[in-house]
Image (cartoon, rainbow, N blue to C red; front, side, top):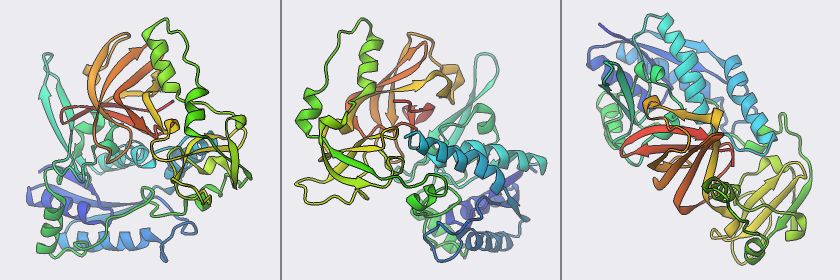
Length: 397
C-alpha cells in the first residue's frame, strides 16, 4: 500500500483530498504545518492557525487517519517572510504563495513526509499531473491546469521541479469546486461550508502596511500625478540594432522624473505600494480613478496616473534574468536565440495571453501580442502550451 502524507490546512479542499486518497486505497497521514506565530498583524479576531489546526484534527479523526502538527515557523520566516521584506525594500512585489509552494510545501514539507516513509505528498490544489516516457526511457512529468477554470491553481505551482512533481498528488484537480463542497457535505466533514482562506500563505488575511512596518519603517514622500500625454511624449524611441534592443525597450516601459508631473498628495513609504495599485493613495477629486504607475524607493516617490488605460500601466514585454528562468519541463528549455509561441499570465486568475518567448544570453524576454497592464517586478510570469504549464520566472522588468 502506497503511503501519502496530505497537507491538511483546515480547509475544505485538503479535507476532500485526504478523503479521496483514502477511498482510493492509499495509506493516508495528515500533517498540519504551523508556519506563523504572530497574530498581531492578522485581521481576524483569533489567530487563524489555531482554528485551522483544530479543524484539520477533526478531519483526521473523522477519516480515522494519523495526524501531526509540525512547526515550520522559523524556516517560513527565513525563506518567505524575510524574502518578502527584502523584495518590498527594493521596490519589487513578491508572490509569497508561489514561493511557499516551492520552498515550504514541496521542499521542507516534502522532506518531512519522505522521512515518515511516504511515497507521495498531496495537497488540495486545483491542478493536475500526468507523465509520459521519453525517447530515453525516462518518465517526464507534466503540470496541467485544473479542470475547474474558475479555481485553476497551476500558476501557484509554477516553480516546481521534475523531482518535486514526481512526488506530488493533486486529488481534486479534476473536480469542480461545487462538487468538492458536495463531497464534503455528503461525508459530513466539518470544513464543508468553511470559507476559502485569503491573504498570505499560512498567515491569513493581514494588513500589509502593518505587516511591512515590522521592518520597513514609514517614510513620508510625494505622490506625483503624470498626465497620459506627458507619459507618451516624454519617451524617446531609440534606434534598435537587434531584436533584443527592441524587446529591452518594451520591457523597460516608461520611466519618470518628478518634473514629469505635479504633486497631488503624500504617502508613508514608496515600498508599501505596487504598480497597478488603486486603493490606499488617499487622493480624491479626480475625473478617473488614480493608479500607481511606478514607484521609486530610492527617491521615495510614487508616480500615479488617471484611468486603467494610462500608458504608464501598459507594457508589451517583460524580462526574466537568466538565473530566474525556471523550466518545469526541462526538456523544453530554450537555447540562446530560440523562440517559442506560448500562452502566458503574469498573475493568478489572469486569462492566458498569447505571447512569444525570446531566449537571450542573459535571460528570457516574454513579448505579448497585446499590451499587458501592471506588469510588476518580483511577480511571476508563467507560460503554458495548451493545458500544460511548462515554465516560469520572476519578473525583473
